[in-house]
Image 1 (cartoon, rainbow, N blue to C red):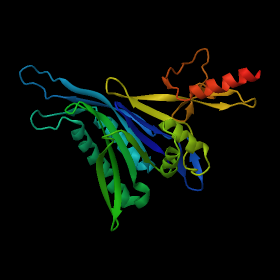
Image 2: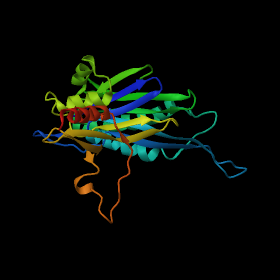
Image 3: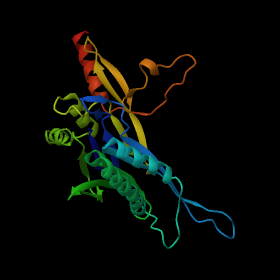
Image 4: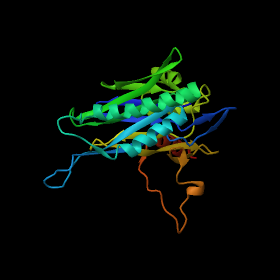
Length: 283
């Protein structure tokens, strides 16, 4: 039902996806939220002497989801609330990204088992979780998934992207690997090529993108794509999770709000080349 790419190059780690959610009878909507940020706040115990606790971890994790929409929604909503109210016990709690990942796994495992018992194959999702580890002083990324053996679900967790590279997930993963093997390297270019192709109908809609910034916090960016009008001129598409945020019903009115969202511009060179070619040809 989707395509997610987790990518690492040196100190840059990003999560990218399409926006399509598929339903029975070949129905779909292109408004799925598949890349999101999750704030995590971890406080020390309250001192008996001062009555004060300290905020010792305050970072934003990155999350990507594929597979079962129901499973992914329950997990991401549960951890989004839970991870803002954590407290650790000095000398006992594993105050690391691995410790946070273990807590998330408990939620993922419980949700996956309960949903599988109710609706079986429709309940399995894949979750990608990344965040800053204070003990290792770097970003760690984990994959959560499940296998089925003897009609029992077996959830698992493993670290990914310890080295530079790509990880592909979802129904569009085989085609994305083929696009990568043909020479395309940027995750958003790969996903756009799969969307524009005709081989994977379950991948579509707008592009979603998030990256860890210089403060080790995951930041969601809109993506500036484009299409060509009837004259071959580029028209910008400023997309945020499938929505064209500056067009149609989101066009700013005199008394309305402007959606001041930061945008990634991976395709600007293509736009410039098209415009330069039109200028040279006299169009």
